[in-house]
Length: 490
Image (cartoon, rainbow, N blue to C red; front, side):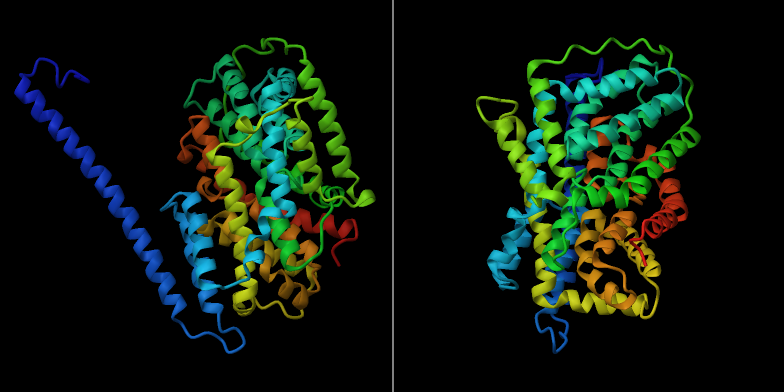
């Protein structure tokens, strides 16, 4: 089939030759891409083998093998040389083959508190989308903020913040909000590619993810770090306590900083059709039932310090109720697809990475290495907090946010011993650092969300890089000050 004027009118033989050249070029491009991936895989394999062959410390004879497995896994996640599913399966294959850790310990991530939160989040997100409750909440909030561009961006942040409490999954919230916000931007006159469109989608995606660090089950990073912390160090963080520690700074202050950066760095005119959005449709019976169920779920999450039931168990219970035939708010087919199954496998693999670091002794070696690079002995707890935050942010650039969790969580104990920083606050320090995201590739929800919203990753760099730098200057000191004011940080 002719695709343009360059082919139109050509003799059949010439057209055939041109088509052959195009096919050859496409094949060469595909081959080149395959060669690049093969080169990356070869480099990762050689690096892992080289690390495995290094002499191990006498007190940790398997440390280098553990390092090699972690290096290969994190590198595959960071480079996307293979799919996330394949990378997770390869991690488990290597771990089981080398017997680097007990099998039950390696698989414990699949029945952890974190896994319960992720499973519940997928089902609740599907129920919110199916019943229309998520769209109702988002549309109702957005209608009040269409009189100007700054108010429009602010409304998106408010909607994302509200849904962080209702839907404990970034991807679930994106599935609910992006169709509405995309329609709202076009209704407001912001065409795809314009600054107004990029600012709105970036807010719905990056703003959604970054401010959700304030809510314990608000995103996958939080629950992965929580699961790793509990697996390694034992102390548990309650829903209400975490909200107190993180909400004011990582939630409210971060949202205000994000809003300011968007309106300054991605300015746009006022919406062309202010306040012209259609009225939200009445809530369906299913949406009302889900609203009651979510209210009960949030009540149980926020009072876990009274009843002691873990947030993951509450999320699983809510998910099961959503799936029960008498209620029928969701079904398994809608709740789980290959991407979500991959996310669950990745969760188990990342928690398994922490297990490998512990049982191989690589975690002890890593702690010593970080201690040499960043000497903390005798430093106050606030310095330890700042060091954990900065290291988590910097490590996430080459290793992604998930990889940073796997590297940093095991060393929190040594930081606590050196500075007196409580291990629980070490988790808060990690989250403070991990919300300083410089590039979209560092986290899956931002990359996937921008793709869903048809915004090139390069278009948001002018927003994300300054935002991350300002977070070092403003958010990190503000978080330390807040923890001191409420008496948690010595």
